[in-house]
Image (cartoon, rainbow, N blue to C red; front, side):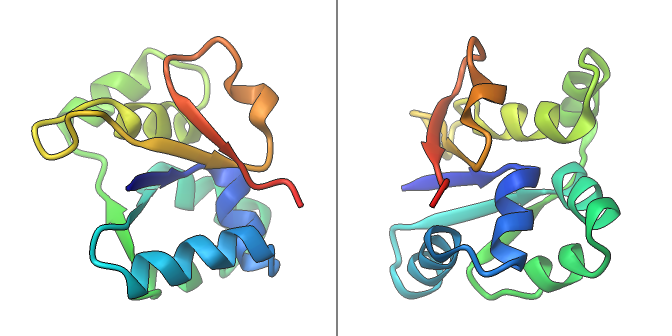
Amino acid sequence: MHIVLDETAVAAAGQGNVLASRLIHRAHAEPDWFLYAPACVLVEADRNRPGTAEHIAALPGVTVLDLDLPAALAVARHETWAAAHAQHAAQPTPDRPDGAIVATTAPKQWKGRPVRVLDLTP
């Protein structure tokens, strides 16, 4: 299972959202669960709540995804960097042929985008 956190999911995890906490626990405890936090998502979450990025990045089950050249090119085509980086990270890759699911507390934000969504709204 491959899951990408968007900025709302990162913020929710920092505020004690039970569903986000369960994802983090599973990614840490189960070998076939992978949880990703794109760098642009961390920046946006930290702007809204300082300290969030450092907290999420320090968690053992979370992999921070850098803003490499392909991600930067994808981000440049969109208005918001956080959502664009999360969407890019959710696309299929050789390591993730089926892509990843975007975890969010704002599922309407993802309507019409080419991603699968996991609603973390309590």
